[in-house]
Image (spheres, rainbow, N blue to C red):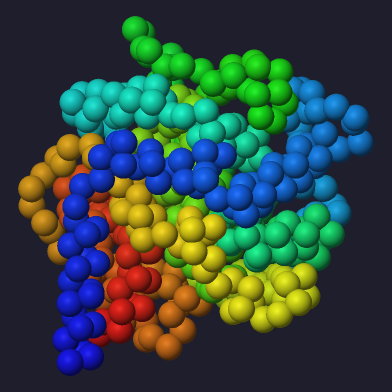
Length: 423
C-alpha cells in the first residue's frame, strides 16, 4: 500500500507540473514572494534584506546616490577575494562564454511569431505587475553585485542568519567564490545583438520609477543587448551554487533564480527568451565548474565556512534552522514548483510536437549530488530525464546539449526523488 501511495503521489505531482500556469497565476505566486506578500515574518525578512543592500550600496556616504550603483560591489569585508586570488584558479571565462553562445545558437533561427509572443509576454507582465512586485524587481536589480537577494529563499529564520553572517564577513569565501563563478553574458549580448523590449518601435512598456532603492523616482532602465540576461545569469548562478552548499533549502534556492529572472520582465528590460537562455547557460556553467577537482577544493572550503557560520548564527543545526515555516515561507509553497516550470517556457508556443529522447551530458548530474547524496550518478540522471520539460520549446535547439539544458527541471527532479520514486 505504501509503494502504491508513493506512485500515486509521484504521478499527481507530474500531472500538476504538466498543467499550464497562466500569466495571472504566475503573477500571484510572484506577488507572494515580493513586497506584496501577506506574511509579516516574510516581510520583515525582506525589509532587513533591502536595508542591508542599501547600506552596502551607499558605503561610507550618508545618502545613496544613483552614480554609486554602477561601481558598487562586495568589499573585502564581505568577500575574501585575496583567498580566491591566492588559489590561482582559472575560471576560463572566454572558453565558457564561447560555450554559452553555442548553447544558445538556435535563438538566431527563431521564427518571428516566437519573438512577437515573447514581446507580448513582457508587455503583459510589465503592465499588470502590482506595486510590491515592482519594488521587489527594483531591489533585485540594484543588488546584482551582492548576495542579499538569496536570503528570502531561506525562510525567515535561516534567512536572517544568512544576512547576519554575510554582513559580518563570516561567509566571505563563499561570497567571493559564488560571485567569481558568474560567467559574464557580455560576449553573448554582442553576438546576438538583440534590442531590449522597451526599445522596440511602438512598444507599450512602462519603465518602473525607483521608489525602493535610490528612491529618486528615476525610471529603471538598462543598456546593451537584451539576449541573454546578465542579471538572470547572476541570479541563477548564485542561487544554484548556494543550493549546492545548502541542500537543506535546495529547491527553494533554485526557484529563487527563476523568480529573480521574472523580476527582469516586470521591469520591462528583458524578454522571457532572455531569461530562459540565461537559465540554460548558468546551470551549464555551474555544472562545468563543479566537475573540476580544483574548483571542488575551493567549493568545499567555502561551503564548510558558510555552514559553520550559519549554524553559529542560528544557534542550532542547519536542518532545524532551515525548516519550512508554513505561510511565512513562500518558497516552500507547492505553487513555486509550477511557477518554476512556467518560467521554463513563459507559455511561449512550441516549435515542434515531437518529444525527442533526452540525453544527459556527462557530469550534469552533479547539480543534484549534494541534495541527493544517497543516489548514484545514474539515478540522478534518470531523475533529470523523468522530470524534463517536453521537447520542442524555444531554445531547445538541434543538439543534445541545447535540448538538455533547456528542458532540465531541477526542482521537479528533486521533488520526485523525495517521493521515493528515484529508481
